Length: 280
Image (cartoon, rainbow, N blue to C red):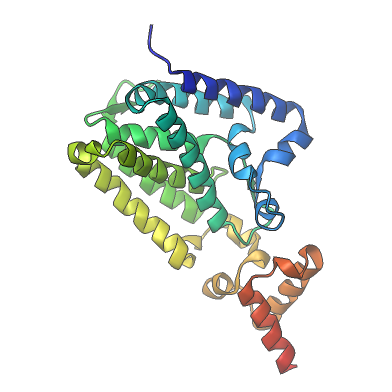
């Protein structure tokens, strides 16, 4: 019988129980899901963790739990229970923090799922097990794990930029990168054993995160979510997308104050309103 770690089993059970409760009780689901306004405005930081145990459907839950089961056993055996648990929650929170950063001006953005944590587990496995291959359901072949990892990072970057689906690519990318980083910190000998794979994945991923932080407009082009929520952009995003003139900008800021209060404005937005009031 294949080994299954106690932490792995406990995480699967907790995910099933919490997801069942969330699917049956909408108020429970809303209370613990990831939602930007509730985290940033109302400082309900527990949602960065609790949202990772909710799922929108049984199929969503099934995919995540199957992936968690397939990759976790060997990883928990090598790292030990406490380190494995640290890896899981670091990946979960890391993925949600990247998502929060990208959507910080979209108060109604929400998400759920263990995908960020699961991606962290998968990419930690890629880092710690050189030569690992990854197969696909119903396909008769597998590919080297480093190729899968690199392609997945590139796909996540494309998904963040285009946003043509309903997948939380931000949480996936953040969870994957944090998972790999935490894994090599806990098992540093993996760097010497597998450094080409680790670097080939971390470098493009780190570059993408850098662009998200310093040049967000480069990843917002053609993004349907951002286009339909343009009133929530900060000034730099709106300027780079070329969607608003000055008067429209002021109108949206006033509407934002009306709906969410003065505290919802960023410092840059407050400065813009102050300059506008001085010019009229």
